[in-house]
Length: 149
Image (cartoon, rainbow, N blue to C red; front, side):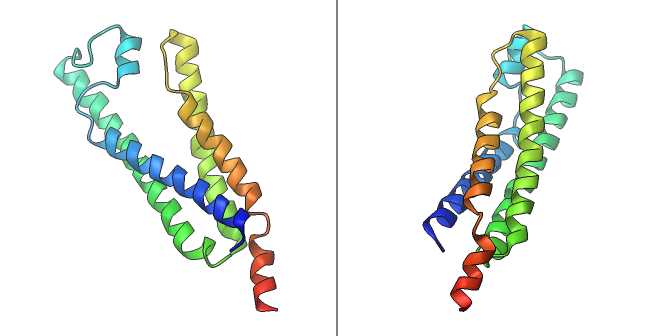
């Protein structure tokens, strides 16, 4: 594997580990995230029990999605990417950019509507690292052919 493919692999891996970490955080959340509490102007544990159940369930669904995407990244990296199959970089990038861009859009929309201090740098970094990883993996299929020859 070339240096560029190793860097690409590392960037995709970092994205997957961050997704797994945040997936665990959201899946096991038991109160509002700080920026959501700020947006609503209440304490982190200030929701009524009915609203709290709804929000925590939505957090858990979000966390589950992050966990699934992070796990999919790891599987794609471990098998087809390491096997230098070109389609794997397209799959990783499509998944990463779709989730990252939607997360960035929604985070910035929340900030625009509420002026809350939202964690937009995270989704922005995910989009940037995914694009970088994609282009660094440009020689994915060619490297395999060169090794065979």
